[in-house]
Image 1 (tube, rainbow, N blue to C red):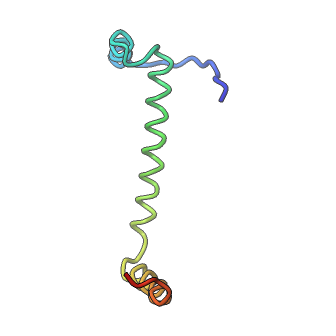
Image 2 (image 1 turned 60 degrees about the vertical axis):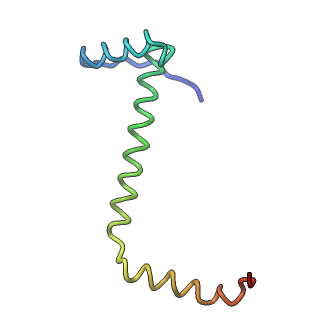
Length: 80
């Protein structure tokens, strides 16, 4: 994927922490550190959205649907 250059404003304390990570060779440069942090945050937000949507589901209805689906499949399962 291609990269795009941008200009951002960032808190000095955060930048100092990023620079320390670069100095310790955790990241090769500031850009990589900030990019990885953004990717992680975006992924976390996505998981949070999934959790919110799952919380809306009725557990009893979901269990009934799961049990209904399994009952027909159990007949076709091999015996061990």
